[in-house]
Image 1 (cartoon, helix red, strand yellow):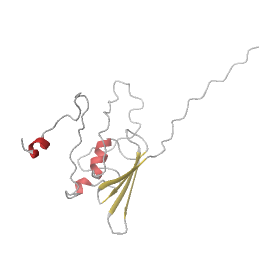
Image 2: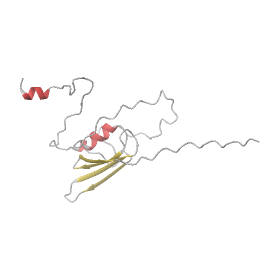
Image 3: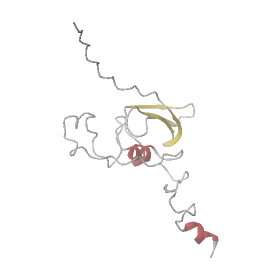
Length: 148
């Protein structure tokens, strides 16, 4: 078997067979197209419009869709690869240019499966930083009754 054929086959990494790495191949040399870039409102081509975050607040548990775990996010993925992979609309999108004139997008999620600040340069993920996600408010304790 030629090396090229061997490497082209999907295969198991570990003998036990219960662990696999399944990430799409990155092609950092492929040209970035407009469909790979996120808009200022956090949308990508072909994505449905983001729904309000509390749209299902009063829905029964059976009506709330189960969101699968987000696929791995790796440096080199395009802006829209990451947005689609995370699966929820970002909380903030900031666009600018660096000193070389390259597009820089800082996309932040404060909720969802992968909260963080994701920095993209020329359409590709270049860094991920953790963000402090505020904890939901704790329910108020009921007042104690005085015994008398």
